[in-house]
Image 1 (cartoon, protein in one colour):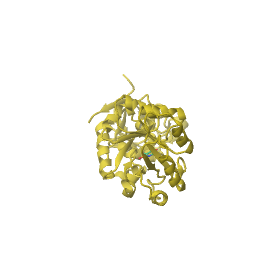
Image 2 (cartoon, helix red, strand yellow):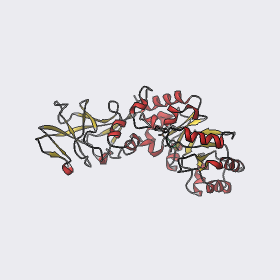
Image 3 (cartoon, rainbow, N blue to C red):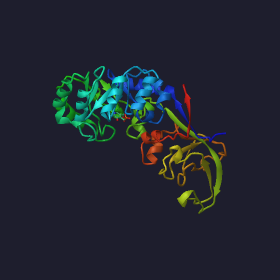
Image 4 (spheres, protein in one colour):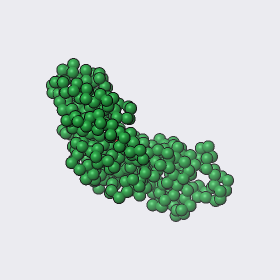
Amino acid sequence: MSRPISATLHLSALSHNLSIVRRHAGAAKIWSVVKANAYGHGLARIWQALDATDGFALLDLNEAIMLREQGWQGPILLLEGFFRTQDLALVDHYRLTTVVHSDWQLDAINAARLTAPPNIYLKLNSGMNRLGFPIGQADAVWQWANSISNIGEVTLMSHFANADNHMGASEQFTRIQQASGHIAAARCFANSAAILRNPETHYDWVRPGIILYGASPSGDVNDIAGIGLRPVMGLHSEIIATQMLSAGHSVGYGSRYSATGTQRIGVVACGYADGYPRLAPSGTPIRVDGILTHTVGSISMDMLTVDLTPCPQAQVGSKVEIWGDNLPIDDVAAAAGTVGYELMCALASRVSVITERT
Ligand SMILES: *Cc1c(COP(=O)(O)O)cnc(C)c1O
């Protein structure tokens, strides 16, 4: 018997979420963002559930090649561009669309010997200050890119730093409009949060990631309530032992939790080596036999401990939902001081995965 922890992936939820995104995106085409191995879900096992997308966006050349080898013939966008000049041979061979964010990349494309001119996404830095040409150079870079015969279509791209929080996307969007509003190009700006909140930013292509997987861009599950997204990933395990603590007795490393009275504790086969956040404090939500309870004490490598007071019937073998349909990953992440994105991406390779079509 293998350890009882497993992740379940609902492929129908993924297809369903894509259709919800499509409804919000209006006429814009959709780059389904599948970087980081599809946010930890496993690109090879899930991409076909997204085959109604217009393109896939990712940043690892190996993932792009894998998609081509598995039969995806539509557009693929490299979100961080190519990293070395010699990568252009693969961009060419596999017909990839690449972000261009630096001068050297334009020079490299200009000098390369290619079988066909690749389409590029000209990345403008409108305030995120990671990748991109200074927004004030939009005109000059646009003209430069268009003067290179080795380049096919040029799309303007930028990325919002605050679309998911109270600051919003409008300051950056104003900057983008002022610097590039007059340029006759296709445009691609919106991430998940801007797809839901800022229809004025949608234009020709949008780039949803987290909402495809059914979690919230802001980390607050209330922000996606009512739009009908379904969680794709569920993480489940079982109680493998129980303990009865007396008043003053503690549980786990560092004795970080002590019972104030007699308290029944369940030991769950799930720890940080499975991807559970080690810093989740006592009180992080979890479901045992369908009943909402919480963790107590430190998260260990392979185990965590839960309060069984609300579920006295629980015993060895009781089902535990760590996150999923009945417990939003956003709620677990919020309690642990992180975001659903990180928890999904952290799902460990030792956790067996069950792929469900329904
Ligand atoms: C990851 C990423 C996205 C998707 O972001 P979500 O918040 O998951 O929608 C979009 N654009 C770029 C450039 C990204 O790196």
